[in-house]
Image (cartoon, rainbow, N blue to C red; front, side):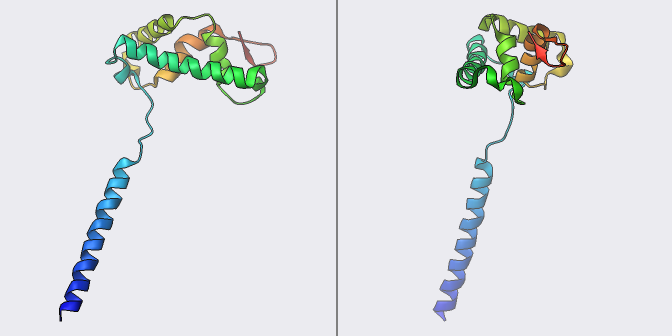
Length: 134
């Protein structure tokens, strides 16, 4: 008589542990979110500089690894390389801040997209072949 009860309690216990474990794993999955203007506006100046510095480091790493040969790919890095060339980190931060101040309706727009809109695209021109160049 005790054996079926022990088995039943063990099964219920294992089900509870499995359910709790699945909830923990579910909550631990990273949410894929991009940094938007909403958080950007609350960040300290040092955090903003660190973010732009990270983007710049990524661009420099890609440029050093691939070089100009990546121009034929679908990578956005060559455009970042050209658009960020000669700009200081403080200037990029200022341009991002200015963009969000001028476009408060676009507060949910990702900061990386704003870097393209406010920093990169204004420095690029269309070539006769249809590609973008500085």
